[in-house]
Amino acid sequence: MRKNYLVLLATILITAGSFAQKGTTFIGAGGDLLLPTGFAADYLKTGIGFYAKGLFGVGTAGQITVTSGYAGFKTTIPTEIATTSGRLIPLLLGYRHNFNGFFVEPQVGYAVLGMTASDGVDYYTDSEGGFSWAAGIGYLFNNKVEVSARYQASSKGGETDAFFGLRLGYNFSLNGPKSKR
Image 1 (cartoon, rainbow, N blue to C red):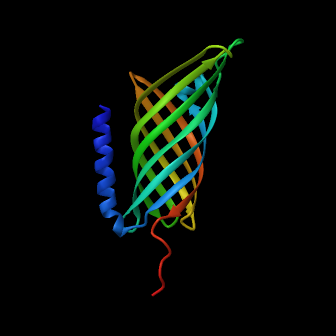
Image 2 (spheres, rainbow, N blue to C red):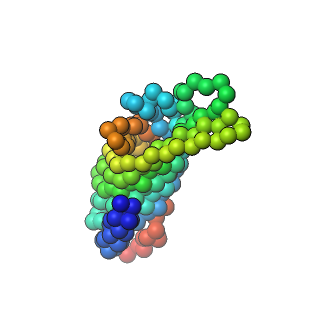
Image 3 (tube, rainbow, N blue to C red):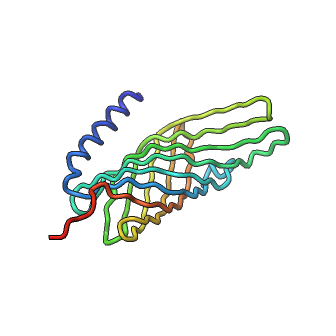
């Protein structure tokens, strides 16, 4: 399964790279604030994290996106002898369409949600991954500073963990400065 996923990812990246000549290519990074909803809200508190993103231009208003990151959460699990925490690690492929600064960005991919417990002596960790999708909207200031919101859900075995996310980031152009003609 993972081999198939890697082949699909490589195919998409190569295809996106072939179209990148028509649009602008960026690398972005920034911070996330994630609010668990639904089942995840029963055991996770608000999380913070970071992300990295590649944006490969297709046409004048579209970009293929590849996003990954890490978010850490404190848990609501009551325990007197152990500390517990949660984590989310997504790998999402998407398409961003730009509308004069505003954008919409649907994404699909894979995400790992894990939990860790430690009593100072023993350490226990458990992780599960599954299908993930996200739908985001946002605004770009000067094609560099990104402010966005998204809903992200991950499913496996009939259970869904979902989050509402707020993001602030900065995008670096890989096309270099535009020459004046």
